[in-house]
Length: 124
Image 1 (cartoon, one colour):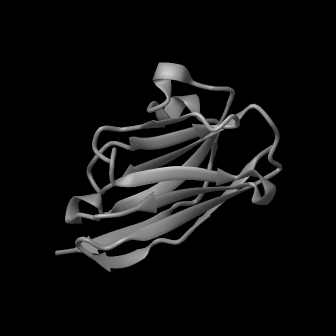
Image 2 (cartoon, rainbow, N blue to C red):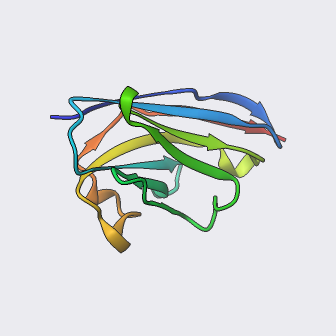
């Protein structure tokens, strides 16, 4: 059983930065952690994912602006978000999948465990 707790959300002006953190309790190996977001009235969107060996993937919408990283000693995965835009406003979630989902990493159904979410609001 893996429990995920997100933190770091908040309100920021366009062009600003935030760093989200996802602490994984009950962490084990062969785990892939992904960051997703969901805005009101929109589908959940996969943003970035990282595997135990450090392999990463990014959605085109955030490539070059967001960076996913991990600190295995702290069982924590970070999402550094720079150059934020109003359209980045959403609830952000981290999720854990067993193994590497490959090309299906953006699909929420690939992830078994989910955090409670943290709100990010970007004003213009």
